[in-house]
Length: 432
Image 1 (tube, one colour):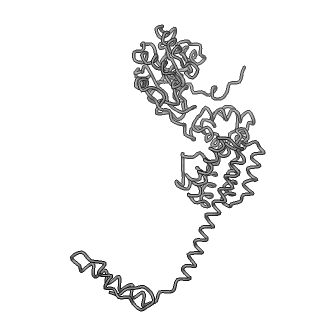
Image 2 (cartoon, helix red, strand yellow):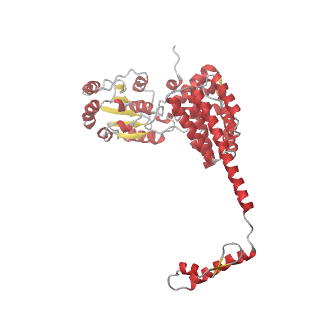
Image 3 (cartoon, helix red, strand yellow):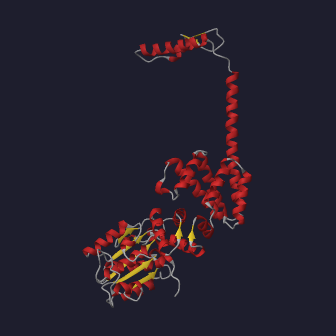
């Protein structure tokens, strides 16, 4: 039997199994419970967040012979048939490759036929934003007055590309990026079921790399399981091809210590181990972003996916940088990433950028030292103010204040200064 990849093997079979989308699943379950089923749904969200999975569960739930609390039972004939794709009343269509007006017209022509075995014919159109304008127009009339036995479920990652006329005729659900905690818990559950040991720091790293997409996280875990039955952080970095976290911290230490030789040594080591320099630049940007969040928020919580040990290292590192330095480093790295995209040797660009960063940091310190030296010399060269001069200054202040307080009309400051008599003290003070 052919091996089934993890994201397909562990795809949720009911709404209760869906991770991180309670605001969607609770509403859908309630609609099925009460029988208030819409004729058209629009699922919006980034990749790997469960849009297609929820569409398939919804297709099962509306046709299930004995639903339980809004969930499909998973045991009846229809549930099993939908799971193994033998029920022809559930139609999945990829709008990325079937986006012409003729494709939608062919689909609409089928709507007149009643379901063969199910209660509803369910059409799941993935990446619906890829449809042409003509295809959208052909679909619009059907969405306005659909047959009673038809349900449309549209899924997209780019809702802004869908015409407002289509949006207004669908019940809209927003799928959020899945929190790191939810992804880590799911990964640990899958790893345990598969007989694989997954360390906590490896789970956190996979969750971070997946960027809120559980499908991507399971795909990374699948690759790591192919390399070892014990998946730790080193296995993940080797399989995915990213720089180990320790080396990112080493680079940060070298930057703050302005050690150009150390920086070039670390980059050479990463390059010799086939690490992509553009991806390394992205990692450094993310690394400095995490440092910035730690410096500004103290405990960034869900804003970053790091282990407890790594968070402590970030806090120690934050004491050695100023916030301005971190922001300037991020800006320089972003410029380097853009330069890499337009061509040129990526390693050379990254090396030059990091060396320039520490050179600019040295110049800033040198400028500060020079300004301090200049200020000290100015203070040393200025003559001491005598007691007589201080007395004269106080007299000026007292007289001016008294004049202003006693005057009931506008005070003529020019005439006041004209009456002032200078002391013969060698310093420029005035008496009134």
